[in-house]
Image (cartoon, rainbow, N blue to C red):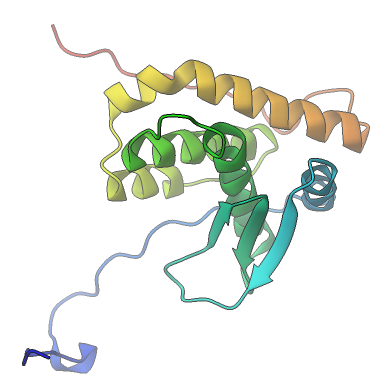
Amino acid sequence: FKTARVFDVIQTEGTPLPELAQTAGDPGALLNTLKTNIADRGIELLYINGSAGVQGWSGGGRIAVRRGLTSAEEFSTIVHELAHSILHERENEKSSRTVRETEAEAVAFVVCEAIGLDTNSAASDYLRMYNGDRDTLLASLNRIQRTAAGILADLRRSNGAGGEFGAPLSISVPRAAA
């Protein structure tokens, strides 16, 4: 073991560090529809006790979600982990963690926005933690779009929703300066 200095938060001064934004709103019956769709895919959904820093994980045909999340956060986390399952579990060549997290979080963003949840800056905050950037996002747009569209189609089909969810979604990517 090594000796190291540690500090308790009460020993510090200054303004508190900003907290990451969270998804807000009410997914309503779509949360249960999403859970049913996951079971239909043969994926086991588990609820775990965990630290506040980890909201979920996926692998080996399982998705685990931390207990105690709001329904909006639970929905967003499940979609994020489902995107990992769809996009990354069967990859022959593993993409970088930055690419994997960018793709999964972008899918969650699109699905959440499409059903009317308010993602605030949650997705961009999350992507910054993994060094996701414009180029990473642009390189994966087709995979993100296909995966999000598939999840939304499953939700519509299972929920009997013939029309659109929430407000129309418009995403713009700023052009790089010439």
